[in-house]
Amino acid sequence: MHTISMATQYSRRKVIKSAAATVALMGVSEVLDAPSLAQGVTRYDYAPKSRNAPLGTARGVFPGRVVWVHDPMAAHWSGKWKSAADQWWMDSSTDQTRVDEMLSLALRRLTGAAADEEAWKIIFIYYNRRARGLEGRTHRKREIVAVKINLNNSKPVVPTNLVNVSPQVTLAMVSQLVERAHVPVENILVYDAQRNIYPGLLNKIWSRYKEVRFVQRDAPDPVYQKHPTYGGIHNLEAASWVEGVSYSANHYDAARFVPQQVMDATYLVNLALVKAHSYPFAAAEGGDEGQTGVTLTGKNHFGSIKGPSELHAILNTNRGGTPHAYSPIVDLSASPNLGAKTILYALDGLYCARRHMSYPLHFPNGPFHNPTEPYENPNWPSSILASLDGVALDSLGLDILYSQTSNNYDENGYPRIMIRENADDYLMEEALAGNPPSGISYRQNGKPVSSLGVFEHWDSDESRKYSRNIDPERGTGIELIYVRRT
Image 1 (cartoon, one colour):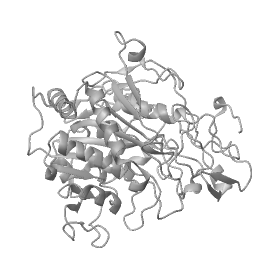
Image 2: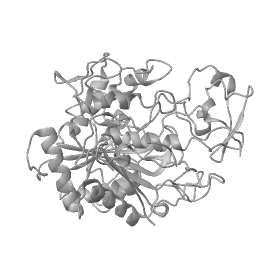
Image 3: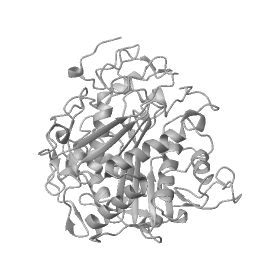
Image 4: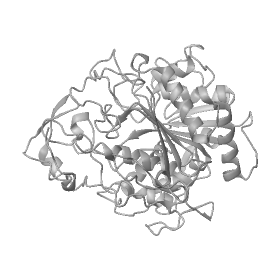
């Protein structure tokens, strides 16, 4: 194993060793175009600037609490990335019962409830009091709950082994909403308005809850997306775009539009992935390098708007994404028609990714200890994370991803995962939205945006403690509850 100091993190120029480098990544051998790669100036030198130094105001029934449930036996895909018959998203690769139990445990530990029904009552009452000024209000039958999933690599015609939110975690969430929160099935909307939904996910949900509605980018495909019960196109539709998002800086056009179907929802569940966004050896997985550090619950809403490409430049660290720049993620998270509807934030960490287009990634460091070689082995991160504080949850997601960058090199000495510079800037902007490092005056509906949650890095990648773990009485940041199931 090669040893490379994290103090000398790579830039794109530094990792080029010849005019044409052959790199073996995740079992994929690929000849890279080194001269074009060397033209960029992207830095992969991200590192936490401080630890246990919370910023912002913690949210939640237990402020700043995030729950991480880790069950190594839940996800057990073989890793045969070339196979069309053995893919990570199939039921043969993941234990649905264990996933259901993981989400149930996460909700109960998040709220302090003894049962799932009680957990959802607590969630709705907390949200309605904080966001709507409605004391003691739980869900009402006519209120729609939208579930935003991340399907960045969804290909309905030919599903691939590139990572999306899993059908198993999606089903577990829908099942919780129906069976425990008692939301009528027809009032549940699952969507990604920038992608089309692959049949494996549609059929997984419809096989149990045939009246769940789905919204995607395009008109449904009558061959590949027909409803298994109704035999034709049913409960699946393209986004109907209406203006619904305003931005505090810069001028955007299509990015101001959101689906009418989401506008009609009263509540939203933000179900994203544990996923980095950029990696310099992009050719190994068939795509561009990316634009920014991570895709967690914050960037998940790029799939909730019509023109996400308009926002790429301000996030791209080679362009407008300079240190402490304006972040449209703050406006998306604070928008009354979008992020401000969120009652629960969750991260699917069964099969994680190192870039926006990526095969599942093994995590070699604690607490996972997945073998990285050979790639075809059944050990995965196999986690579910949840919080009522989206900033706190994304802080944890970033810490997990960064913790897997060390001691994780391929046979050529290249890091298997790298975190792009300024990765936590949007979290500081969200946490300090009322007085952010960028100096931007974030406003929604003419009113200033206040803190959207608490940002903090844990003390170390080994002990993984936040300020409320270290000092439960006086800590003002994150409280991490980690549960390992066997």
